[in-house]
Image (cartoon, rainbow, N blue to C red; front, side):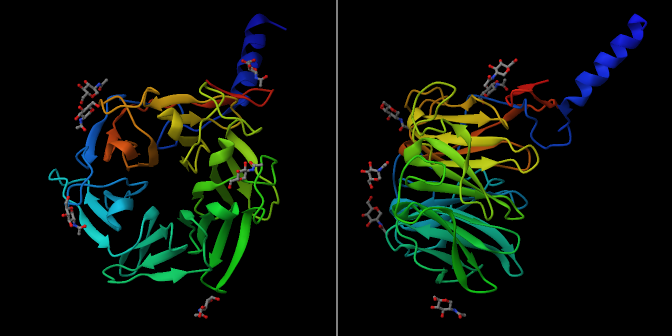
Amino acid sequence: MPNSMLLVLIQVLVLCSCVSVVSSTISPCAKWNTTGSTVAGTGDAGNSSYQINSAKGIFIHKERNELYVADFSNNRVQRFSLNDPSKMGTTVASNIENPMKVYVDDDINGPTVYVSLRFLNRVEKWTYGARQGVQVGNDCQLCCGVSVDKEKNVYMSESNRHRVLQWSPRTNITNIVAGNTDTNGSKSTLLDHPQGIYVNRDGGVVYVADMWNSRIQSWIQGSDEGVTVAGSSKGTEGHDPETLDFPNDMIVDDETNIVYVIDTSNNRVQRWKPFASEGDTIAGDMSAGNATYQLSKPAGLGFDMKGNLYVMDMENNRVQMFELIDNRPCSLRLESNGSSKLG
Ligand SMILES: *[C@@H]1O[C@H](CO)[C@@H](O)[C@H](O)[C@H]1NC(C)=O
Ligand SMILES: *[C@@H]1O[C@H](CO)[C@@H](O)[C@H](O)[C@H]1NC(C)=O
Ligand SMILES: *[C@@H]1O[C@H](CO)[C@@H](O)[C@H](O)[C@H]1NC(C)=O
Ligand SMILES: *[C@@H]1O[C@H](CO)[C@@H](O)[C@H](O)[C@H]1NC(C)=O
Ligand SMILES: *[C@@H]1O[C@H](CO)[C@@H](O)[C@H](O)[C@H]1NC(C)=O
Ligand SMILES: *[C@@H]1O[C@H](CO)[C@@H](O)[C@H](O)[C@H]1NC(C)=O
């Protein structure tokens, strides 16, 4: 065989081992400015319209370019327009107790807010302009994560009972979709104090921040066990690229399946590619502090339409934005041993 043909053959083989993801909005090789800027909150805890207090959850409504904050100690959900430089918040749910996480869905009337209330043990739905919320589904003990799929099924994590529930508006029935009721541990069938959850739009996969196991688990609908997609599957915490330390939340890119993790006790945001055995840091430098490159107990995250990253910087009482500065397309090459590498 002539050398040139061999070369073509090798090139074809190399190309075939690549999964092209050039169409994704956020490239698997994306880089963000590691210097953040504050888009909500002042750094000091307070209850004015431009302050927040110990907030733990955020949601970015991409089309409206709005930021929603579950303002834990102020017992409210605040909405900030990211187009408005004044950074003044508007209260869209008030007189609620200790909201943990928030999810916003579009309904005919406008954006509908779903909020988990930690000590009232429930998720409430606030339709646009409502003065009161209504409970959806069964009770949710030490309720934390909340997410909604395109059929408007509502998912909630019941931290104290180590499971994730799904409520169907069609049947008004609440089912268990992840974990084993009242049993915690690090086996693949178990969760230990689940926190934030992310459900892909079609509802096929539930991702869970399995906090006390320092790992992120993915549960395919109907499965009785989870698969570790970030952190150590054994449930051991750590401070290196292979491990996480009490992760509180994550977002998964539905196109690339890349998992963006809030690695809370390591004060950083990690990116884990599919089948990777380690993650890389995209924000925070692991030291807790209030400098522009630091985070202090981050608790939630989101991306806007342009791919900019937003982080709920809990102990600093501020929401930081890290600008997407390099979005050159690249492909994820899957290694034969199952790990992934940038091509
Ligand atoms: C990152 O942001 C800082 C502050 O806004 C700015 O001074 C710096 O030039 C930015 N870096 C890059 C690489 O864009
Ligand atoms: C940042 O932290 C320093 C030292 O802990 C403190 O003196 C300062 O007030 C803080 N700044 C803000 C904006 O909270
Ligand atoms: C807001 O905070 C101030 C003091 O910081 C307090 O006096 C006031 O009662 C608070 N308002 C509400 C509605 O909690
Ligand atoms: C849905 O189920 C809840 C709890 O079982 C019940 O209280 C509620 O009345 C039901 N709603 C409807 C519309 O049937
Ligand atoms: C289960 O959670 C309890 C606290 O609620 C904790 O003390 C215990 O260590 C956990 N068990 C396992 C196996 O992780
Ligand atoms: C998989 O292979 C890559 C490159 O050949 C290597 O760097 C990596 O350590 C391997 N991963 C595992 C889990 O064996």
